[in-house]
Length: 273
Image (cartoon, rainbow, N blue to C red; front, side):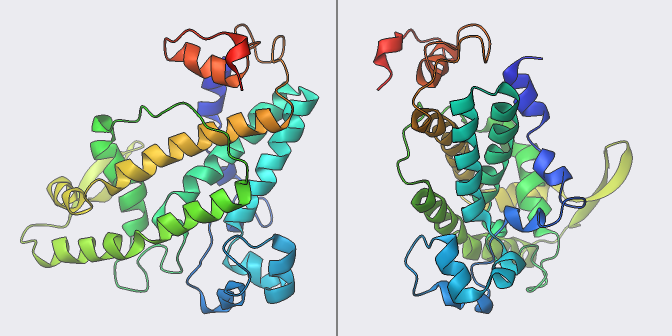
């Protein structure tokens, strides 16, 4: 199996571990609006985990999520894997890092009201994260710029969480607005995974998608850019090791060059900064 195919097949491994690995679930979110996390307010925009533990207690942090720190921890593991030229570790950690970064771009992974359960909007998580992309993702432009080097991963992770959290009010208000003005059925039964499931009506979803004004596509594009940039940055921090004989043919020029080649561009190994 090619590396890209392997990464695609294992992109959801972290989700599969939620019910079997202790403390896996909190790695996927941060309830930033939880009153219990007000202890973070005086620690700056990107607090170190050790300082957060001292201010809040470790149990509190794990109770309300550790996603931005998990991105840093997985990034550090990927640097080590690149440095060791350990293909299995590179692929495994890259898949997990990509998953956590994608989660950080989902607004509902940043709030106590993660499924609309606090506002009578139950099911909005799967609606935003799955139903809308299934209906409209085929029309999204997901071609992004080449990866860039991220010098401060912690600050980047916290900034991404803040951007996502800032979308929560619109996400909720748009659902309320569309629902209040809707005369037809809100749900339909459709086949999914071999069984009939209750889903939000497709026409209703179209209206909701319009009210979100490109939010899902924006966050998706940002996630693609973020994942590729963090993979690239980990390779850079590992000293730009040659990947020849590790990741397969065509990888010896480095990740930036490989990225360009996959998009039909020519670049020389010396062009890697």
